[in-house]
Length: 125
Image (tube, rainbow, N blue to C red; front, side, top):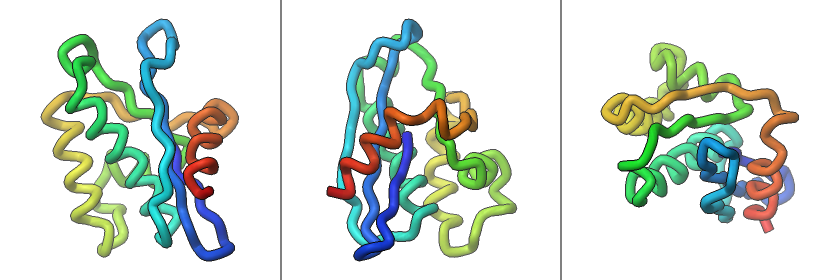
């Protein structure tokens, strides 16, 4: 999952892919989330991906690995004491979904996240 932010109009987009263990893309998403902060766009992308997976048939077929190139947001999910106060509730909601389902959270380098980045930028419009 990824979020993208345009300084022009301060508009953000989110995008992500759901792949199986053979890296075959099962589905993808890309959408505009309007004016928002860059880190909130990243969190919205993760939440959207979680919602899609949890409500899909794939929930019963495997374990989700959440990957993002935003190190700070991944750190927030792993240690909520680091979260900016105004984002605390949003991060707690994400963490509760991850904890209940025992999902894996993993930071990946930006160069490994180019497909999700492209989808997020397409979401900006």
